[in-house]
Image (cartoon, rainbow, N blue to C red):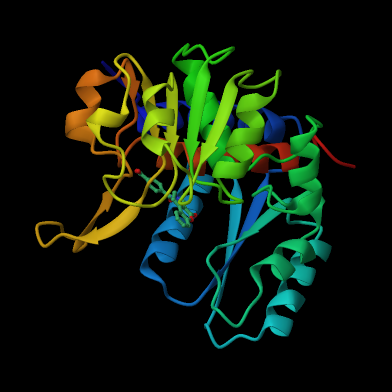
Length: 292
Ligand code: BQF
């Protein structure tokens, strides 16, 4: 069993990005600039945005954090998005999700200029991704593909089962894994209403678990020698931790790991790669790699 070290891989890629930024700036180019909008004081969101700001520093990017109370109206938030759309110094920006219930996430996502949409959530980027055109690709699926590539895990022609059908992970992951230029795999998507989910998993060469249910994937669901990618990051209370909580994956790691050829841990697996691929997208935005 090989443990996939997402943290170390992300650190290495951030160093590669920092080196490229150094070259760009030395040659008189512009330092990439990522802006982030954070609404409210959700503990998870605070942590995720802090991770993103710290990653910008590691990459040599400029970053701007815009904070608003959760009393901000949808119209006011849309106006802030428009300001960032028009700010020529900002190469890319994100609006940290989830948003308070009185704000439509879809409306906010569609208000973002797709050329600055480094999360890859805008319908133009989603559509272009689905037909294999150059675009910003959602950071979590992109990070998973990068891990599979760097660990030389064969995907072409393999059976890949994806658990979960969210717009952020499950759906784009399925699209990318089926495409010839990325995964080239045979893809099955399972969700809360799937029949025979266990049987589908037992036949999989690669399982990507993104359902947000701690310990959902158990040893009896996993084929000997399979690769298991755990996207789960549920915060569960833990009195022994300084922060008062720990991250729990979707995979019952201790019993599943011995059956696997490769497996990602939580924490330190997919999570750091998600942050790192946001940095990759920001570098692309700074270079105007896809648009304009
Ligand atoms: C790690 C996220 C659910 C909903 C909205 C490193 C992150 C997490 C874990 C992180 C996530 C999850 C992010 C680890 C960003 C991933 O060491 O295991 C980093 O910061 N993430 C987000 O921005 O929004 C979310 C999960």
